[in-house]
Image (cartoon, rainbow, N blue to C red; front, side):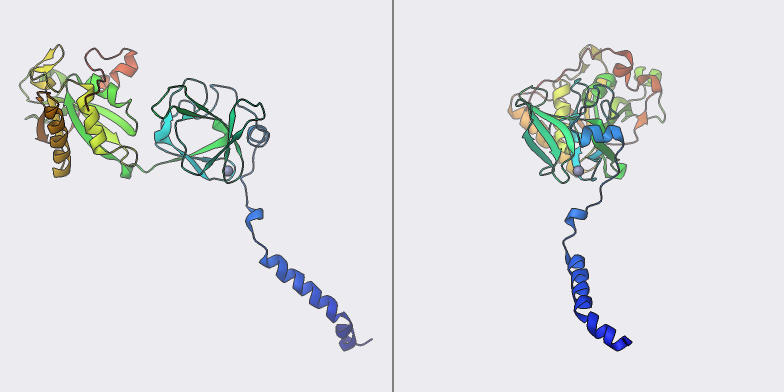
Length: 314
Ligand SMILES: [Zn+2]
């Protein structure tokens, strides 16, 4: 048989093979989604719906700013702003990014299981009615089911507030959702690089001030400023609590007109409610960070503030 005859004889088969090659190439690709390779411990939790030992996971006591993603498929699941300390031993969130987490009845007939909506990876369980946060919801997630992507610090905003002993203001701001970090220092005085002793002498004119760095995608400047009026007594005109003197006066240091207008609006609301607000509005100047032993004072000492307590005023 010569070459031409062979091609003619095989023609129907060649046509059929070509048809199937084209058909496979045109098939939808969803089912071929590439997942990250999992270790046997990851598989035990993510695929076989196991549970990691409490208090052992990487993200239990983790407070970085960013997003938590699915270990298996990389889908974004939770924002760090929704994470809270439940002391249950697993990372806890009071909300998930909409549409990313699937809830289904657990085979135990009691709990509600949560899975990655995209790939079905087992995440943990969701509980309601425990009263941890205002959302009354706790997504209890295995650390091992998650990866973390830090958020760029350039997207952060900063507010400056003085309201008595700066240890107390720092302590309270660290409890506000969306606050990334708080530093204590001095602002509004006449001298550069003041020391605590110089400020206490009353001769420099500085106010004990907190620098509050927050994530504007989680909390607005107005929320942060509103909170300020609720964690100290804005009606005390000579200091705060037992701390009397200029360095303890109530001040909002505004960086721009928008912040000033926000503070004026909030003071107006309080005045309408009958509060005789003594808070001053002063243009922000250089923030002089205080000595290291003043930073994180309450978390280092394990004590709690003596004159700052959250009081709802709005
Ligand atoms: Zn996934």
